[in-house]
Image 1 (cartoon, rainbow, N blue to C red):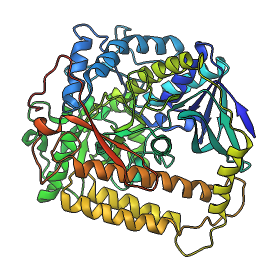
Image 2 (image 1 turned 180 degrees about the vertical axis):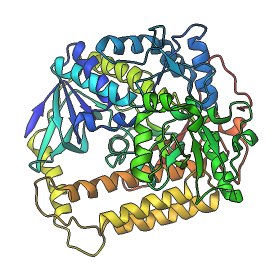
Image 3 (image 1 turned 120 degrees about the vertical axis):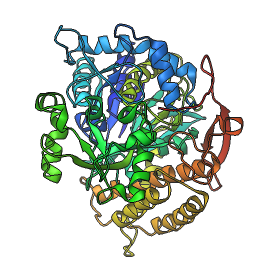
Length: 559
C-alpha cells in the first residue's frame, strides 16, 4: 500500500512525538510510524527528571557551562546555548499540558540535585518523569490529529533525487509492507542500547534510526561516545536512577567506604557519570567490589523520601534482587545507558540529506559531547524535537512530493522475501545478537585500548559473515518477530561498526572515551567531531568537524 503525508516521524518517544506535535501545529499533515505502542517507547524509562535553569539564583549560562564541562568540551556550544536558553519555556509548557511536576512545601515547582550540576535544577515526577511526559505528549498528538501507525517497523528510508522522501515499513500485525511517502522525514527512533549487553535500554532499542539514516547518506558523528550509567541493578542491568544520589544516597565499596572521595572529592556521588563509572570500574578491579558490584546505600535518606520520591527503584530492588532499600544497600555496577553520538544535525534537526531531520538520542546536535549530564536527555528530546518539527513543517511548504510508487514497494518486498526464504544453517539471530552485545561490552566499554578495539573490528567482521547465514525461523507474515529481529540485527551491526571505528580513531581519553593507552585528553589534536559516512560496497568515509566554541574555552575538568 502507498500512503501519503507531508511529514513522517519515525519513532513515538518524546523527541518524535514533540516533533510531530510541532509540525502539526504549523499546519503540516503529520503521521508517526512506531514499532511499539507510543507509551511503550523507551522515553518512558527515564526516571530522574528534566533540567532547566528556572530557580532563584540559577541562570541558563550556569546550566550551559555545566553541560559543556560535563561533555568534556566536545559539545557544540551554540547548540548548548539554545537548549539551555529554551529549557524554562518548555518546562512551563509541559506543566500547562498537564504534567504534574513535584512541588515543594511552598507550592512552587521543586527540584532535586543531579550529577555535574552547580545548582539543583532537575524538575521531576517521582522517579517516573519520562513516563509522565510521554503520556501527556501522547494525549497532545492525538488531540492535534496526528495519525499514528502503531507497531509498524521501518525497514528502509526512501531517497529520491538525493532527498529523503518517505520510508517503507512492515505492518507487524499483518506482515504487509507499506510505502509511506512524504516531503520530509523526522528520525526520532531512539537509542541503540541493545548493541551492548548488559544495558539499561529496552529490547526495542536496536539502533534502527542510526542505521536507516546512515544508509540513506547522513553521516554519524561521535559514535564512540557511549555512556555507561554508574548505577544499574546487579543481574538485570535495570536503571537505578541518579535521583537516588540526588536525594543523598551514597556509593560504598566492600569495606563500607564512600570510595568516591578518592576520585571526585568535591562532588562525590554527584560527579559526572563518566567519572563515577570509571571510579566504580577501578574500585572493583582493585578487589573492593562485591561480586563485581559496588553498593548504592539509601538507608540514611529516610523512608518518606524513598517511598515518595523513589518508589519505582524501591520496588525494582524488591522484585529483582529481593532487597528492601529501606533496610539494605543495593548492588549496582556500570551498564551501557546512552549514546551521545548519532545522526549529525544542525540546531534545527536538519541533516546533510535534504528532507531528513533527526532529534533525540538518535541525533547528534551536539549538546552532550563526550558525556551527557543526567536529566539533559529529556530536555534534548523536547527542545530539539520541537525545533525539528517546526523546521520540517517549514521545509515541506516548498518541497516536491515523491514520484516513486509500486516499483519501490516491489524492490523492498523482494529484499524481505529473500530474507524469509533463506535456508536454515544453524545460525540464529538470538545467539548472534548476544555474541555481538557481549563483545561490545568487553572491548568498547568503560575502558578501551588499541588491542581490544582491533580485536573488536576483527570479531565484527566474523559476526557480519555469520549474519549472512542467519535464517528467519518463522516463515509466516503475522507478527513475525523473528523477521523483525533479523532486520534489527543488521541495523545493530552498522551501529557497532561506527562505534568501534570512532573509538579506534580517537587516540585520547575524553568523556566516555577512556583509552588506557592514551590516558590524557588531547585538545591540540582531538578537539573535533569524528564523522562516519556510509559508502555502499566500500569502507566507510571518515571526516572531521571542529567543535563550536562560543564563550567557554576548554580547561581541566575535575569534580
